[in-house]
Image (cartoon, rainbow, N blue to C red):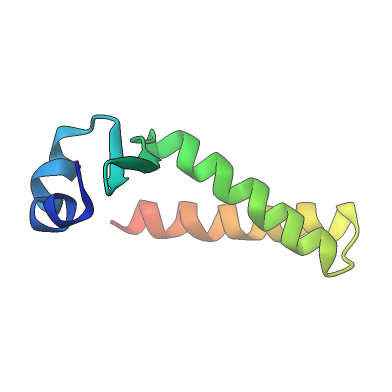
Length: 80
């Protein structure tokens, strides 16, 4: 599908949850593939961990930060 078709049909495309190959002038430029929410969260955790390490925090501080975030999320989820 070309970019114009993609933009015009974005909401329908997202609902289908299928792999999409975008083309520009009939040449593939991008492949979009749906991701499982768990995989997305794991990618986010990995990126966050890398950012924290690059900030100079040690493993203990990183672990403490993630535990605090987890506890806060648990509290928020239990209130819902």
